[in-house]
Length: 75
Image 1 (cartoon, rainbow, N blue to C red):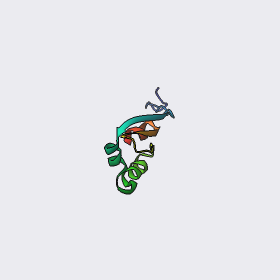
Image 2: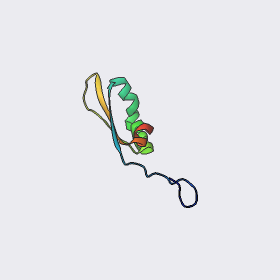
Image 3: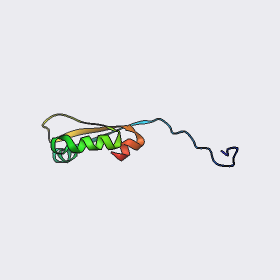
Image 4: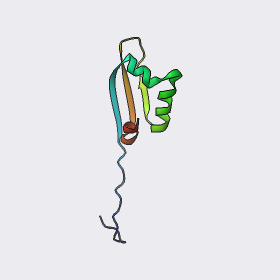
């Protein structure tokens, strides 16, 4: 839509929460977690996404990333 000054009005962003679940091998999960959890902590801080990794000694684990669309894609 055109504003009174002839410019375009910006559409408000939708507030959508996205949840992404991935089944990952233990070695992949280890690289995401990093030493003492430093890598996953940094990803959480930089993206503002909520990241959880299932517990267990199974060969595969579930990694869940939740947040705004931008936060999930940034993570």
